[in-house]
Length: 87
Ligand code: SF4
Image 1: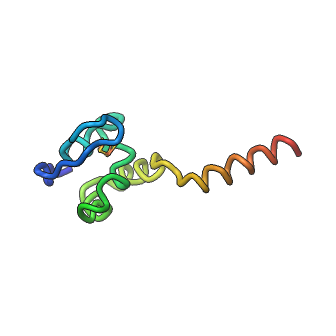
Image 2: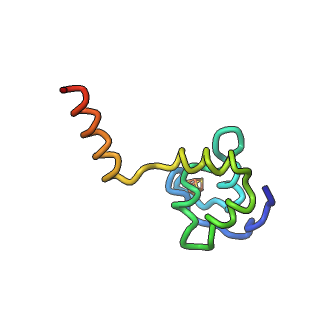
Image 3: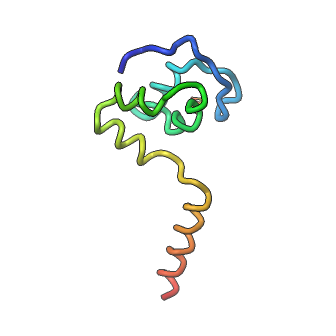
């Protein structure tokens, strides 16, 4: 992945201090992007397109799978699991 956008910095909600974009690109498992990279950077630039252009298809798929689900989707999933357990 190309190392660009290094001058962009934002406050990391996980660490509580400022981090450069290139930190977010490589701080995940196996030096992959952080699972929150889309949520954290979408307001700053087209991070989705940037990642599509710079990650392999496999890396991009793994990132999409690792993304946190919206709370409503998580709740619906939990309700479905409870229903299956009780039926
Ligand atoms: S993408 Fe990850 S490391 Fe980067 S600011 Fe967000 S939570 Fe922190």
